[in-house]
Image 1 (tube, helix red, strand yellow):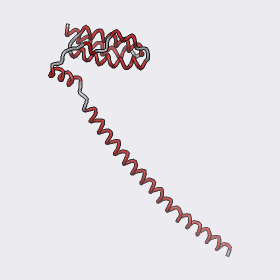
Image 2 (image 1 turned 45 degrees about the horizontal axis):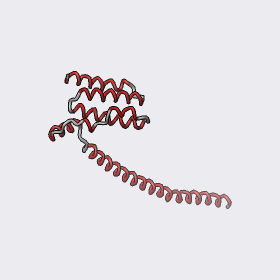
Image 3 (image 1 turned 30 degrees about the vertical axis):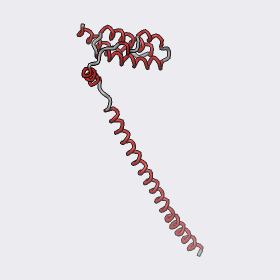
Image 4 (image 1 turned 90 degrees about the vertical axis):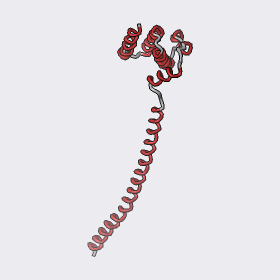
Length: 156
């Protein structure tokens, strides 16, 4: 009798455990489904952000387009709007040097657009000086410098 009771208890316990595992599995599946829905929502949001970014980047003009706009409106070279070279020694922190390195780069593009080689050379020298202060390797600066010098030779 004890053996029958033991077998019955083991079978009952096994069936009970098996039955109790099923809802747990369903709960796991519900969590997985919710996670998948969240992932889908996040993916949709990321895709929307990417599309928004594309439209932002598409809205920027290329240097060629900017030069065409300047030509079309009859813009004239105005050196007063440039960041003065004499200020280049006033920048002491790395962040100010880096920021103004970018400003001088934009100024150089503006100068090149209007074919002012002497001003361009002066700005290129300042750009090289600031880049050295930031520890930018000279190898990175050689290609733009050679390109600028080739352009300068064509103009002169």
